[in-house]
Image 1 (cartoon, rainbow, N blue to C red):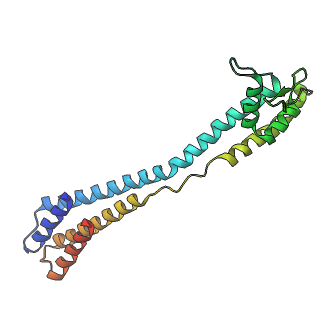
Image 2 (image 1 turned 90 degrees about the vertical axis):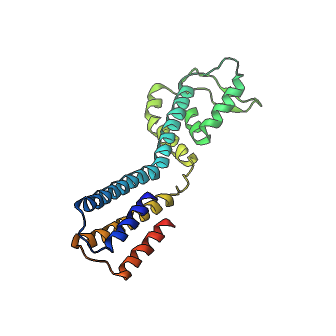
Length: 210
């Protein structure tokens, strides 16, 4: 890594016991600022990744709720038909999409004059209408609640997102910032680093390489 080569060169310079040029100190300060900005940016991206699945799930629930609610109201107020689709097959598919709980309420809400609709085997699915608009409006809150419950129950629980790569990146950047800070301390006071201190920095560099 280029950062490690720079740090190694600065370690060698710290052994020389000579006055440190201002340019080197400025470079260290700029490098530390870059580390901090990279760490902040990666943390923001980590948070975005951890939230994206939850946001997708919320959008899925919203879309499914709208679709099922529209379908329920269509059967409560009209006698749906689709070209090239047999009436019995359409009734069976839509009844399955609504689910038993919502279907029961839809049958109670169906307006007068709407005919009974049966499935392919002659089983009654949508009852003949007997309600009126006033009753339908009164039952709308219950319909919405049932649809939302059904969608929530059917929504898949998102799997845990693997964020270990972001954590490793953060740990490496923090290690590099510590190394950068130690080097800067020596250069700020312009003294020769002891062999033990240099060995500690070298060990830290090898840790980051791994």
